[in-house]
Image (cartoon, rainbow, N blue to C red; front, side, top):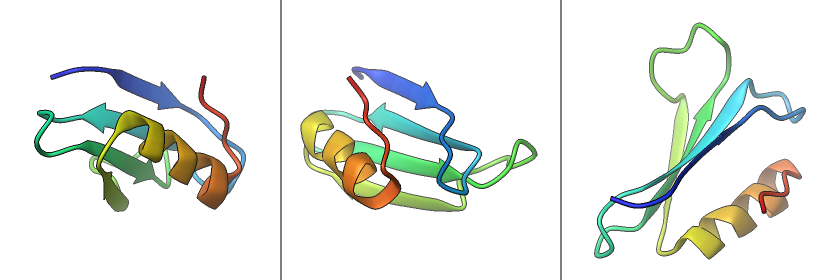
Length: 65
């Protein structure tokens, strides 16, 4: 397991979480729509942390350093 980033955004979602699985799996972009969400309403799997951050920028307008 590796890096984990959680942030609130202003693109109509409560929170986006980047969760790195094992290196052979990749990084999940988990999208929570409200504070009450027990699980992400949407998730996307990217090969690398850099690609996951790029998806956040392109799809949600969210910059993650």
